[in-house]
Each structure stands twice: as structure tokens, then as C-alpha cells.
Image 1 (cartoon, rainbow, N blue to C red):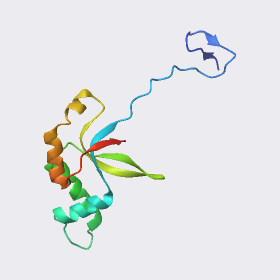
Image 2: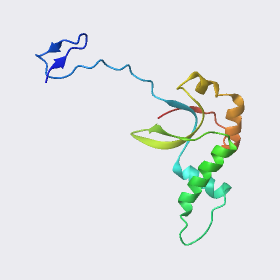
Image 3: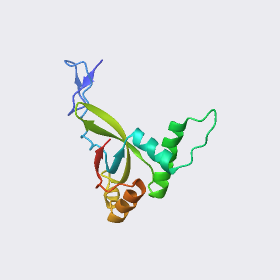
Image 4: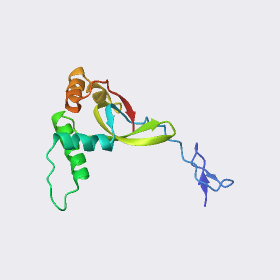
Amino acid sequence: MIAFTRDTLTPNTSDRTLHKPKRPKSRRTQYFGYGVSREWLEEYGLKHTFIPEGPNTHVSTNAVFNALEKITRDARLGTWHHVRADEHDFVRSLTCFAVGHNKSQEGKDKITPERIQRLKEVLGITEEPRWWKT
């Protein structure tokens, strides 16, 4: 196999690998909002949504899905995201309800006091939102 150098298209027979230019590092997406655990979602779902009973009903799973749907609808969010929470010696996956993101200026402009207040009311919390890494 003939390899090419990064700067030219001339063959480099001394190196048997193909040199590709390095891509610029992309910025990791971060979401501004609230990260909650699966247990928190299950508790919220059992408290705030209707869970049908029956022999083939998985109460825990239904509660989580109902909570996800209710929160995104009531807070007028498009969707929710999986984020990481570094806790001591391990990384935990959480569900994040975000009012904005760092991917574009439009995402940053979505972070308004009104959207934050509405999400606080739906979640029933008083603490301030923070940035979460994906």
C-alpha cells in the first residue's frame, strides 16, 4: 500500500499508513437544566400520573414513561436528554430536562427566566438549574 503525506499528494513509501489531517476537536454538548434519576422519575410518575393496573402492567416502567411525557408536555420542552453526573468514584446516568444547550446561539437564547420558572414549577423544586455534560 502506498501512503500519502499530510501536506502533499505525493506517495510516501517509507510509511505504510495513510496520514489524514486531524479534525478539530468538537465541543461536548451540554444542557442547562435539571438532572433527575430513574428513581426520582418513578416516584414523580406514581404521584402525578394515572397508572393502569392489570396482570401485564409494569408499574415502575409505566410510571417513568408517564413522568417523562407529563414533564416534557407541562414544561413545554421538546424532549429530554441523557447526561452524566460524576459522583465520587463513578459516573451515573441521569435524565435531564433542559431549557437550553451550548450547541448554538439559538440554544443559549432559549435559557430564559420564564422557561426556568415554568420547569421549576412542573418539577416541584426550588434549586437553580446547572450545566450537564452528555
